[in-house]
Image (cartoon, rainbow, N blue to C red; front, side, top):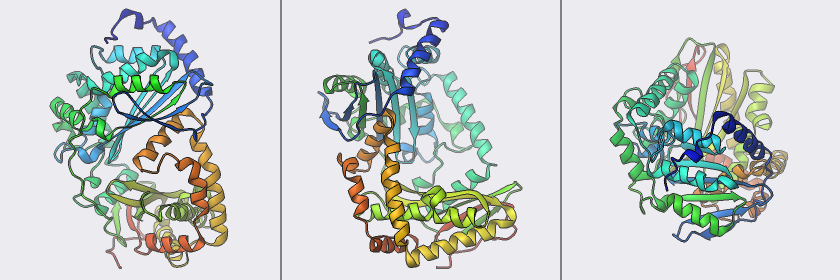
Length: 453
C-alpha cells in the first residue's frame, strides 16, 4: 500500500507532541518474560521467535541477514555499509523528508547495523502504529530509492569519517590488527570501506548488493511485545515476504588468526599510545565455548574485575582502562582487546599483558576466580534482558549462534557445569600461542618484532 498520504503528515507541533508521548511509553516499558519464547511460522513460512508482553502497547523487532562487509566486492569496499545508510533516505514513493517525518510523527524507531558477516536491523513501534511501522520497514528493504543526491550526501559523510580515521590511533591499530591477522581475507576489510573504494560505488552497486543479500533463506527474526502470533505472522510476511527466496552470497573461506607473537609499531605524534591485542578465540558451537567465555571474563572481559584491569590499571596505573572480548564470526573466532597508555609506559604495559597471558595459559584461573566469574555471569545476564529491545536482540543472536531456543533457560546450568579443570585446559588452548599486538603512538620503549614462537 502507498503511505504517502496527507493523513500521515502532521504539523510539526503535533508531531512533536505525539513523539514525546510515545517516547515516554518506549522508555518506561518493562521487560517481558524472556524465557517464554514461542517458535512460530508465518503463513509464508518465515520462522519467528516471539515473546508476548501485553503490559505495554509496544512492539520490538530484531532481524538479521547473512552478508555484511564480507560480501562487498573487493574493488567496492563499503558498499554494504552505504546501502544501510541509505535505506531510510527515501523508499517507495516517500522521499527522505517524508520518510523521516513519518517516523517522527509515529514515534517509529528504525535502525540498521552492518558487521563482517551479518546485517542487523531493529524496529520499535507502538502497537497502534504497527501497520505503518512494518510498512516503512518493508519499503526500506524492498524499494529503497538510492537517489543521487542522497548517495552523494552519504558518500561525503563516509569519506569525512574515513579521513578522520586515518589519523585516529585506535582505528589505525584496529585496522592493522585485522589486516595482519587475516591477510587477504574478507575479514581484513574495513566495514565502512576505504578512501579509494567508496568514491567508486554507484547506485547500481547499491542495488546489486541489496538484491544479493536481502533474502528470506538467511533471515532471522524475533518479535517481542503486545502482539499475538497470527498478527506477527501477517506483519512479518507483509514486510519480508516479497524478498528473494535465496541470497546470492560470495563464499567466505575459513580462517585462523595469523601473526601471533608479533608486535607491529607505528610512530604517531599523539598524547596517548593505542594498543590493540588479540589471539585465537572459541566459537559458540565449540564444546569448550562456555569455559572459554568464563576464562575470557577472568582474563580481560570482566572489566573492573579482570586480571588485565587489576594488573595494568589498579596496580601500576599504566592505563585508564583495558579490556577484551570474544568475537566469533562465521568462519573464525578471536579474542581481541585494547587499551590506551602513556607513551613512556607502552612497553611496560605490553610486558604486563604478556606476563598475564603466560600465567593464564600455564596455570589457568584460580578456584576463587572461577566461583566469582560464575556468580557474576549468571547475575549480569539479567541486565541483557531488561527491555523488549534487548530481548529481541538476544533472541536473534541466539538464532545466529545456533544456541537453541532454550538457551536462556539452561544458560546458568551450562555455566555451573564448567569445572576448574575445564578452564585450565581451555586457557592453554586459547592463550598458549600468544597474542598479536598493533601499537600506534609515540612508543619510544617498544619496537616491532616478528613472532618468537
